Image 1 (cartoon, rainbow, N blue to C red):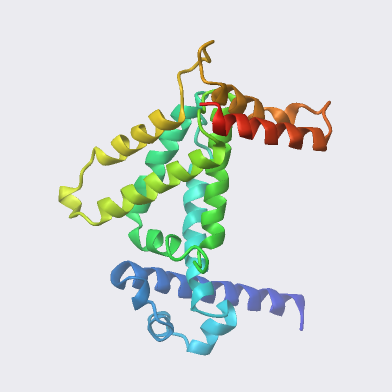
Image 2: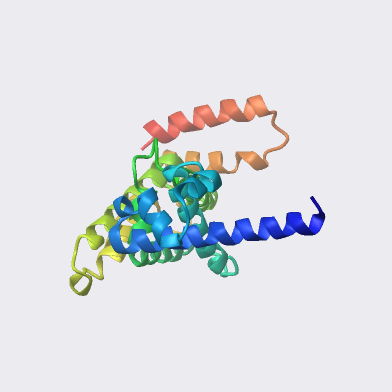
Length: 240
């Protein structure tokens, strides 16, 4: 097989894959995840079911591809957004962008929030959590986080999922437009302090800030840093 024929076959496969993904996304948007059966997708894309299995493996992998493509497009559209200097304000901006994206793409949100252990979009969800952890870590590094980083990540994520689910359960023209801001501010008030540490701040806050800065303490060995993190975690947990 010549190089030209290989390239031609690859392009044809990519075009076929794109057609199947587009058909799947349209079916999910109009009929929900359950409506995107292999038979329905095959009919909508004008292909045989074996072609779907050959290109994607199974329905779970197909849903994962739909989610990954949509999320990748969304991330790419925001790639050049200016990151704010204030990490809390950056969290606020990212939160509202994410909520708006989920409300505009309820079918994608449904895929993302399926059973975490078997969700076809688990990889995409994990990537999103990595981004959130970085934002929370930056807040901690600035000395403004007053709960453990992972607790803050969990609280922000839980509030986000709950807010989107609640709004999607309301009629579009009767949705509580103030709910996203109210939910976020409730979480922010629970996990952060003012812009500067004060002498009377709780020891936990200082411990969290120091723990977040340990990666830059290269004069300490890996073991010493790990021991320090464990000690600081105990202070953070009991030093309120």
